[in-house]
Image (cartoon, rainbow, N blue to C red):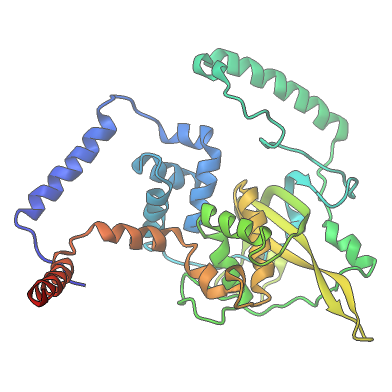
Length: 371
C-alpha cells in the first residue's frame, strides 16, 4: 500500500480537529455524562458489550466524545481497555445466582417460577411519544414516587429474594436434553491471544459477545432465513445482575467462601432450543434438540438471541453456509476491525491509484495505435 506525505499536513489535521470541536460545541448545549448513563441505557449497554469493558460511566463518556457514534465510541473504549492492567481473573459465575429482573420463555407458557416481563419495549406500540418533548422534572419525580410506593408494598408482601432455576434443567430431568459434565478447561482469552482456527467454543463465544450488534443480528437473521437453516425456539431469556467474586492472588488454595465480592454486572443470557435430526441405535432419523447459548453485557436481548443461533451454527461447520463458517462469521463481526478497514479507504492512495491510471492509459494508447 503506497502512501505519500502531504505538505502542510500537520496544520490541516489541527484545523480539522478544531472544526470537529466546533461542530460539537456550536449549538452551545452540553449533555452530562450522567445524563447519558440515565437516559441512553441501551446505547451504553451496546458499547460496553462490543468493547468488552463493563463500565457504564466510561461507556457514557465515550458516547459523548464520539457524539453518539457507536463505532467510534467502541473504538475509544477498546483503546482505553488496552491500557488497563489485568490484575486478576474473577471466579466462575453461575447464572443461577442471577438477581433476575426479566425472565421469559417462548417455549413454554408456564415455567417454574413464572414469567417475569420486566422492563422491555416488546409490548409498547412503537409510536412517537410527543409528550416527551415537554416532560418536566417535577412530573417525573411524582411518577417515580408513586411507582416506588407500589414497589415497596409488593416487596413488603413477598419479603424474599428469589433465585430462579433454569428452564432447561427440567427438560434434562425428563431426559430430553443431554446432561454434560462440567468442562473446567481454562477458556481462551482472545484479548490476550490471537484468534486462530479452528477456534475453541470459548473463543467463539467471546468473539460473538463482543461482536458488532448489527452484524451479529444480521448473520443470525440470515441463518433463520435459510443460510444455515437454524430456526430455534427461545427456551429462556433472562436479564439481571450477576455477583462477581475474586480470589486473593497470593492464596491459590482458598475456598469459595474466602473470595471477595467486588460488585455486580448486568447481563442478558439466552438459551435457545434448536431442533436437529440425529440417528438412533437403529440408524433411523429422529428429532432431538441442541442448545445455542448467548450472553452479553447489559440488556441486549436481540444480540444475545442472535448469538445463540450462531453458537449452534458454528458447532456444526458447513462450507455451503456462510453462517456455519467460523472464519467468515468471527472475522467479520468485529466493529473495530470492520470500521477501521472500511475507513482506511479514506486515506491517501495516490501512488497505487496513479499506477492503475497509468496502466489504463497505456492500454488505451496501445488500442488507439492499433486502430
